[in-house]
Image (cartoon, rainbow, N blue to C red):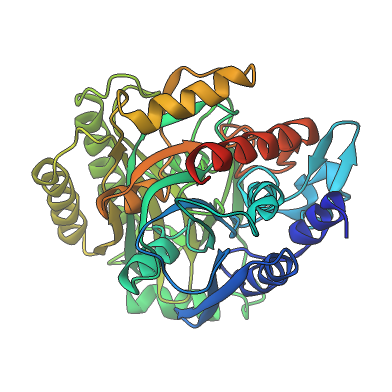
Length: 439
């Protein structure tokens, strides 16, 4: 198949968190083998879902030293299919309009792996002073789980790493860390019984209200602010919004029954937790993070779901490299205490520190030189996104982050897309990087 056909095929393979990336990893493993690379598939089962890292090298075995070209093969959840207007309401249907290809994972970051493979397959038979290893990981939506397992299983011996992420082809040498948090707010037994029997009653009725994130607003936070103004005794029938802990939720919906009058309702618990989150946001804004946008740590409530027993909220806290562990732990303890006092449970599902490369290092300067030679921008940037660089950096690798495609307002959103011409440029960049650092 051609490069473009492979792009279509890879987008068509579901690698969302709820499905797992195994099919995409197996497909990419086949392409790597066809290119003459030696492939290892590191299969893992995480929370009952099959996941897989793809590890491809020009020679079998782990060498004494190597250079890593990495991209994650999982995508975020698609959200409502109806919002994918450029792909005929199917996010897995890769669609091309002029120079742009649309589809889930097109920018973040499945097609970047194909670009790396397209460039590196030209070096499979050439003698190298520093061999490359091409890796496709899983778990970018759940705290870089795949990258962590890659390191723990000692599958790499890399000294330098090119990490794939949509950066609009800007060179990134610093990125934020990530803490994934989960809050579970239980219904009382009275509420559980009422909700279970509600739909069986002939006189049952509810009210619904939808919230939209406009101009960068968080739809879930808007919904919680509205709820905090309502009478405490109402019945919460459903709270739903967002598609992942990382993405800014653009839609949320609530369904309530206003005539319940419970003695120990869930709503005051939710309101107290909302107040504590707003207080934490104030603490985060007071911590400076120069060079990042916004210039301070952030907390995003990305997803809320309602089950028979509870309302569960999942969010992520973006932390610049300047946040030391003691400060981060203080913020988390404060939030945990407030959540527990409200009668709910709190846990941190994953934590990664930010990374900050030495901008004056030979690795960074040589990479800048290659970008300059190709007529591309070579100035250094920082990104709010958390990437696998946080994992690789802590294991001793020099890391930079670079890739085609736009992140903000594009990845983690309907009609995600990337320019085909940018993919072509990425192939050229990776080819030149391999020539410079491997041969």
